[in-house]
Length: 178
Image 1 (tube, rainbow, N blue to C red):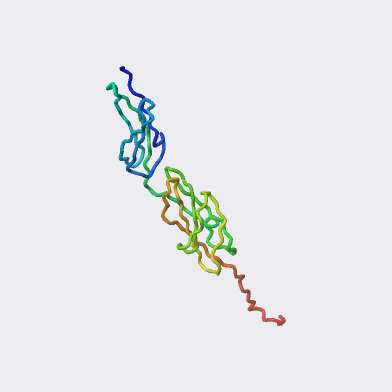
Image 2: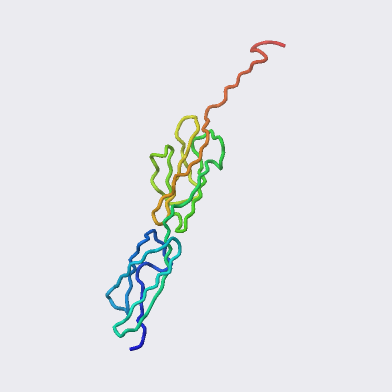
């Protein structure tokens, strides 16, 4: 027998992304039902993992896959009503942008940076209700990548002013004739 063994890597998938630096690679040799493992340590970014093994006849075979290690948090931004300075309504539109090598999965929001909304699927726009009362309002957002890592908090501010201006006529005096 001089045929190199067929090595099939069963985990992780080729071209996959992970946030785990230390990884256990699983593979089989020549279709054996017995799965073998090998520990590897990944570096940030794209990694090529090559598994080599020898069959009982002494023939060497190998197989390679690529895996991306992404341990960084996503980056994101938020804008309230297209970066307007003022609004006269508590219902606003948030414009959102986020990026990460693994992709963006979820987002959540807060008016106080303490209590956040339930995480929801990422979108570039979101209807949101500001906290009540005329004042400077801040909306906070966080984004989660497809590996489960959350971004740092990003925020934007807007002035909520729902009070109509008071108009006072000073001249001419009321009921006067000129």
